[in-house]
Amino acid sequence: MEKHETTRTEQQPLRECLAQHLDAYFGELDGEVPGTLYKLVIAEIEPPLFEHVLKHTRGNVSRAAEMLGIHRSTLRRKLVNYGLL
Image 1 (cartoon, rainbow, N blue to C red):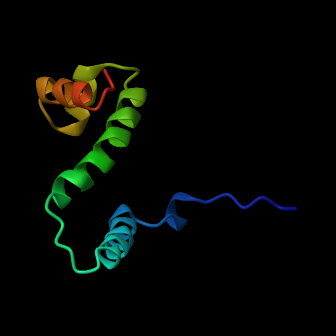
Image 2 (image 1 turned 90 degrees about the vertical axis):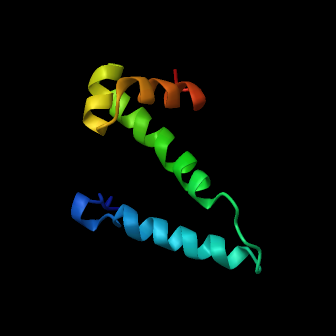
């Protein structure tokens, strides 16, 4: 059996993936109004983003913050909040 490897060009863009998940989320709300949708989405996206960038920088928080375009203290605070540091 031949194994099919997904190339970068075949992957669904993050924007489209998020749109599909949000459509499903809104469909499940059954008329309810979400109160903290922004926090929910950010809390789902930031941790894996930070983990991958830190892995790429071999744990160097300063380099990771520079890559992310945020201040080092902001990144450290967020890492602590997510239990990643």
